[in-house]
Amino acid sequence: MRNSIKQWFFKLKYVIALLVFIVAIGFVGESSIVNRIGQQREISRLKGEIDEYNRKFEKDRQTLHALKNDVEAIKEVARSRYFMKTDKEDIFIVEEDE
Image (cartoon, rainbow, N blue to C red; front, side):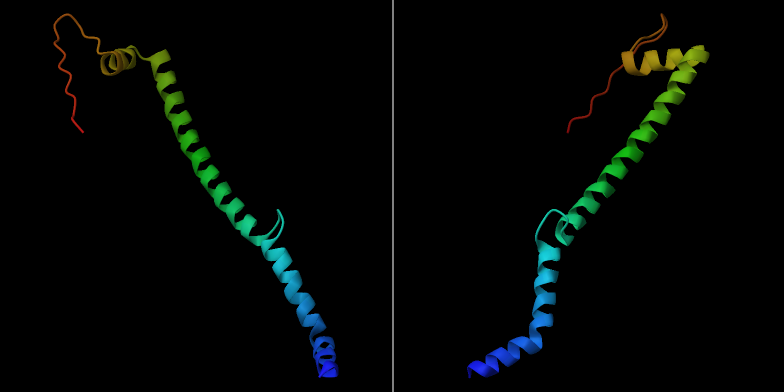
């Protein structure tokens, strides 16, 4: 009985070592596959945020350029954001209930 266990162990020692190695690499430590997948998801999310901020930056840059060079753009921003009006206008603010 004891010899059969030893023989079985020696026949499968490489398979057992390989399984232990796979478990150690896959689930233990900072560079495990599970952590790696989580880090890749985080990287994807952050890249999406970077793209969003780049789009906002470009929009704001174009608005700033328009404000520096166009009087009508200044009037438009003053009216829409700060509710300013000319002497002949009335402003009605409509708020939507949520």
